[in-house]
Image (cartoon, rainbow, N blue to C red; front, side, top):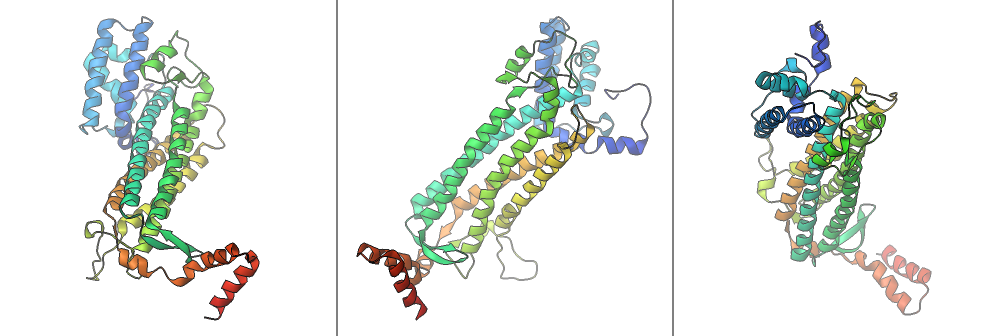
Length: 394
């Protein structure tokens, strides 16, 4: 039975369309909805709407359901629409009236918001840890091979001397700057919407501070209308941070593709990271780096989807927001997967010192020569012209 059932049936095509892909996407959300439902049940017990025995049964069943969901042992039938219906149906089937009482004082609106916040908190923790691992890997690359010189480029032309260390630590520092952004958006979402109902509060004496603490939120999201306004807003804020991380990985991957070209040969990708061609026997392709590079644009597309879907809506809940779930989940998956493979790539990168040193041709030292003249008392503009004239005549 659907949570909104009023005794009539939807046309089949309408039902399929409105359900969408929630039965699949909600498999990720289900463990977090179980946890939020336990907190809600404890809140109902606290105000006398559930007995201790009913609460014990609900907690037992939800804990087991969460474990099964995390183990991948659950599928949600299409007719149940989403994980929220699946959970209530399970509790009602097993526990009878106790299951029928679980939805008192909440709407699917604050139910999905709460489950999403818990999922987002979990995924942001995974992102933070994965970013730190890539930072550490770049640090190790600097320690292992950082002293090896390579050309630095401007306008895709040789410019000044650089090094493997300067290059690796540039991306290390970029990713370090992403960590406060992750922390900032984690702080933003660290407020409990549970108890805001459909967006206008609930006429029951719910202890929202109690349930927020039970779910380890630092604070309650007080205004129920804002709880609904924050759906889409918070997802957009999260993806904007993930875009920053993917932007750094995009440029790191692009450099690694260029520097590992046979024509450069400064870096080498081990065979275990390279795919081949179905036609050309000699090919070893950096597909993993190309996919990471493209991942940035997958996320910018998700960013635009979230901004477009949640814009131009009057306050209150709208079914449009169902479409925000997929871009959020895909953005987390793409970012975490990209960080994971980039960690493996950086750890496995080989540096050809001889090829790097061969690339250190004389023009890279032109600015250094101009500065030597400046140290001898020559005005910089004159020193610049002298060195430029030398290269023009070559």
